[in-house]
Each structure stands twice: as C-alpha cells, then as structure tokens.
Length: 144
Image 1 (cartoon, rainbow, N blue to C red):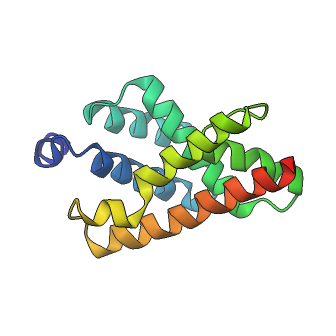
Image 2: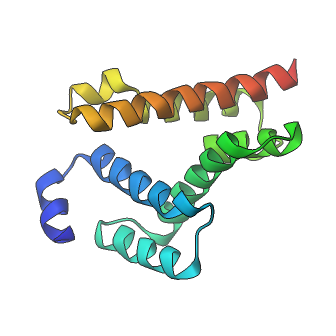
C-alpha cells in the first residue's frame, strides 16, 4: 500500500512530507511518542524513501511543533520554537531566517494549492504556517 502511495505521488516530495507529518502528529495524539510507534513511523518513512537522518530531522520539527503548542513556560516554548524551525539555540540570525523561509516554502498553502492538495491538507498547511510564523516571531522577538 505504501508502495502504491509512493508511486502515485512520485516526485511530489511535499505530499510525502505532509503525509509523514500527519501520521507523526497522530502518534502524538496521546501526548507522547512510544518506542513502538516511533519504530513503525521509521519503517513507514523508510518505505517512502526517507533516510534515517531525514526522518529524525522531520520528527524533531514535528516534536518541536507539538511542544510549541503545549508548552507554558517561556524557556520551554523558546526551545520548542527552535526545534519546530529545525535550528539550534545559538543559530545566527541569517541562518534562522533561512530556516524560517524554507519551512514556510514547504508548508505555505499558496504553494501547495498548485500541487493539487485536497482541502483538508490545505487546512493543515495553513495551521502549520501560522505555527511556523509564531515560532519565528518568538525567537526574533527574544533576540531584539
């Protein structure tokens, strides 16, 4: 079944990434990611052509997103914002902006609509871009 999905989306890597992000977020629905769930997600990602390194980077960003949405303390929220954008705490401003733009480019609904994504995925992409923007603004505001 995953093979058929991979064949159908072929070169549209954004669709594969969105699919993986959705199933990772679903695995977090109970508030944590269990080792059996992570192993299954790793297998799915591998079957869809993701290397272990690519999967770990994606998992880190989705984990950061989940934490960013749920953290209350400023320090933890700031850490989660960095994870959501896929950058380290001490990243230079130029690299931070580059990571922000890359994430926005991958998830912005206006870019994805041209790729024929269904309405439900467009709604998920819109929410994700709001979170990416909020994370960037939190980090940028902290640096001023």
